[in-house]
Amino acid sequence: MITHLLTDHTGVEVIGVDLTTPMNDEIKSELIAAFHRHLVLVIRDQILDPQQMLDAVRLFGEVFTQHNKRFSLTNCPQIHYLSNEDHYADGNRYIPGAGYHTDHSNAPEPPKATVLFARSLPETGGDTQFVNMYSAYADLSDEVKLKIADLRAVHVYQSRHSVRKLMVLTESDNKNVPNSVVHPLVRTHPETDRKALYINPIRIEAIEGLLEPEALALLDELLTHATQEKYQYRHKWRLGDLVMWDNRCLLHKANDDYDMTQLRYLYRVMLKGDKPI
Ligand SMILES: [Fe+2]
Image 1 (cartoon, protein in one colour):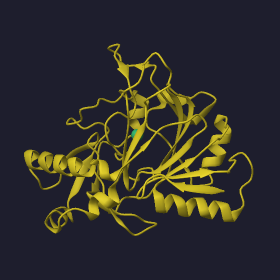
Image 2 (cartoon, rainbow, N blue to C red; image 1 turned 90 degrees about the vertical axis):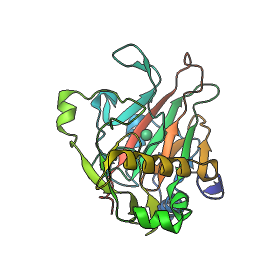
Image 3 (cartoon, rainbow, N blue to C red; image 1 turned 60 degrees about the vertical axis):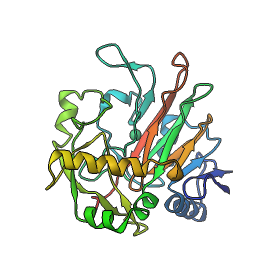
Image 4 (spheres, rainbow, N blue to C red; image 1 turned 180 degrees about the horizontal axis):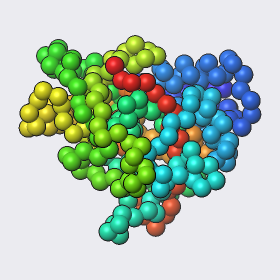
């Protein structure tokens, strides 16, 4: 196994691992350590069918049930797909993942990790951008850190403040999704014990104890700060990339800057996480 850092703060490329073959404990520990240290693991050159992807991902944790079953693969329902070929009811194209967010933060125990496997990619564009929320938190002024230390945000399936609109849930999916959950704005990572900013412009509806204009101004300020280029790793996809990232200390977004006549199609699995504290 060979690793290369992708930036000096976020992302590591892994070469020479075949996820379809049994992995010894040493390599597994190295991968887990690399994941906790670098937050985005890019495992290159994989050839995986859905079941093989699921088996590989289970090395890192238990599979989390994703909310919108519409995107579930028929032959392997724990895997969902991301595609640029779906449309909203009004006929407009749906681009999953546009706009910075962290996955499924409206769950009481949001997924610790999301894993994507690229099956079909546009010739150019469609990168996934990540920002490091440990660094973003660490660089906040003491004054802001003090201000947000005990604040808690209300997360819902889709915030009414969100610029991006999600696909509507079916009635049966909706039953499995909580109305709202409350999570701290600053969370401590259960594995690394490091503090990270935990915000999500798509899901946060309110901040407890703050009036709406004040809450929105604060969230805007934090998002603008956190999404600066200096905190970013931008992943340019290659076929065969399996990318696993840590939702507890990153935001991510997909880009819609490519030729939409070219298919962008990836498998997605999420892994169970803890209640943010
Ligand atoms: Fe996402």
